[in-house]
Amino acid sequence: MFAKPLYILSFLLLFSACKKTQEITDETEIEQTKSQEITELDVSKLKYIEYALDSKTEDIIADWDEYIQVEDLVADIKKGDLTFFDDSKATVKLLLRELKDNIPEQVNSPSITARVLVLETKILKLESLTNLSTTSKEELLETIKEFFVSFYTLSFQMNKKVEFDNRSIERP
Image: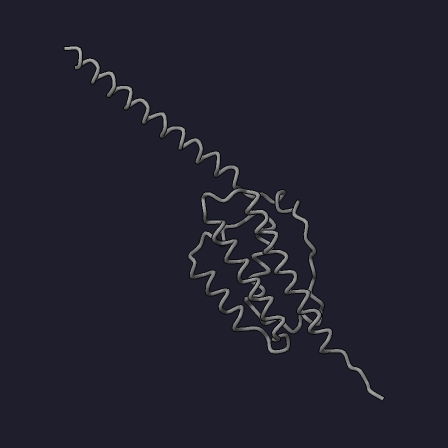
């Protein structure tokens, strides 16, 4: 007689505890999603050096469509738009494969290939962190900064390669 009310009371207690846990989890996920959102202001606060392409380098790589796509990706990320990484992984892998395969002959050297490989690594890292729900905003911003640095280092290296190739030194 005394056990029946005890069973009912413990069942109600267990049921009410489970519901509270679910509500807390939903609220935490919403707050985490809001705290992960990257804005243009957040990206503009990052410190890195930007290198512009020289006009001779621009002429050489004018037909390198994959590099232009990466330039567009950089511009989108500067606006806080990471939707490129929401697409299928096949799109990203195709871009990276063709970026490596279609390097123009005038700038194709081991130093450029190494910079493209670093850029590929940073793009893949950024993609994986963008798609993870446990990534903190600070970690994502640091990875965006690494991606920008690798992209502008590639631009700088291409400028140096073209400048070195155009130098003509006369020997006496």
